[in-house]
Length: 237
Image 1 (cartoon, one colour):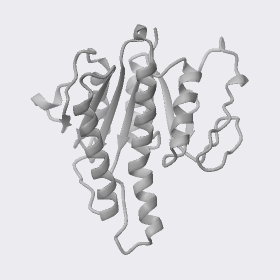
Image 2: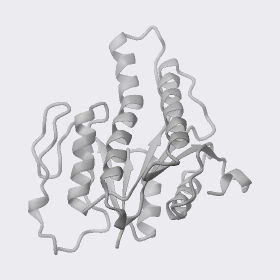
Image 3: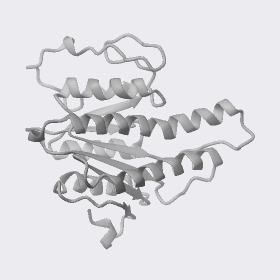
Image 4: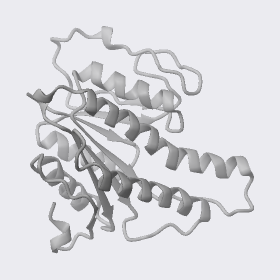
């Protein structure tokens, strides 16, 4: 049965490259694009509200294009995270695995307005917690027939750690969260992989992530894997 790989955020170059590799493996890709809650053919919802899916527009037997329309997702909203995972599971039948890419991005100094600092922390830290929470809940509820779900959290600093305080705080929070999940998941009915990506070439990193998607279910690293783009022991999933 064809697997479905959820990829977020779809406006990140590495996420898009990883989606391309997943398609090359024969996966269907559910791409989550940061937005305001407006789904394809649906109405624009208020902040955090589930959007109206337009799945009734095309019959199930109609051939799908190489790239399905992305699912709009409001990152800081836990309701939007739940809605996005639900829409992906309804549109594609299930979600079998997910790749979440966290990038440091640019930030702001501590002299910025509190609301601006809060927005950065919510968009870049809480968003991954809410989305991972919904995905792991979905994986735990899956039947055993499709095998365990797999969550891959990529900490993509690309060899350039964040320098701005707010961006560093958000990226550090996601890094600690990913490490804790990877260490606590050995006995869970799903796999959690955390990858520290210090390779400046997104195409090489995406190829590495495709190997993780193909790793056997019994392989559970329990720690952060480090990828630099060089051929070393730590670069082999």
